[in-house]
Amino acid sequence: MNTYVTGTTIKHLREARKLTQAELAERIGVSSKTVSKWETAKGLPDISLLQPLAQALGISVIELMNGERITNKNVSANMLRGKFYVCPVCGNLLHSTGNAVVSCCGITLPPLEAEEPDAEHPITIESVEDEHFVTIHHPMTKEHFISFVAFVTSDRIQLVKLYPEGNAETRLQLRGMGRIYFYCNRHGLFGKKK
Ligand SMILES: [Fe+2]
Image (cartoon, rainbow, N blue to C red):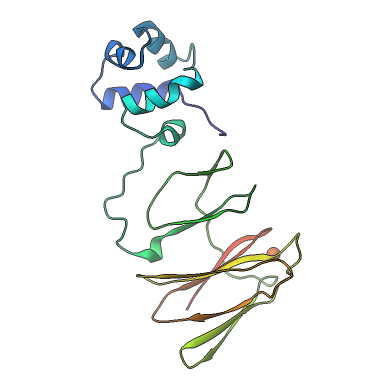
């Protein structure tokens, strides 16, 4: 984890739950003086207290560490607003339809921002009836490759995993308006309207 809980976060969440320092202290089995120390940056809760502390504050441990609670009013509203996350350590690929705190290999992953395909990552789409042959003109070595291609519309996502030493191409059914995404392990996420 690249962040640790801060006193400001504890204070903010405690007040939002309308708990006194003594009440919070009692719930997690410490003294109110200890809670006061945390909140004034004169100490930090032991790692073994994070789970009970998060529970007492009505939040997940990851949200507690990040200092914010994620609340989505309607996550299923539109998949076009979904987000991709890729773990830089293990390559894990995640997709969320709403805001989320996503963590993998001890790292909190930021949602990826897609760029327009550039000169080093050109994409061509050839349409044959309702199938579309998507090719990304890009190396596919173990060090530098395209790891997935996705087509996202408001109600569905097609996701194709690609592997080094394979070809950077796939077939997609492009129904409706959407966005084609692909991810280069070195240069990040690219997106193009379709
Ligand atoms: Fe690249």
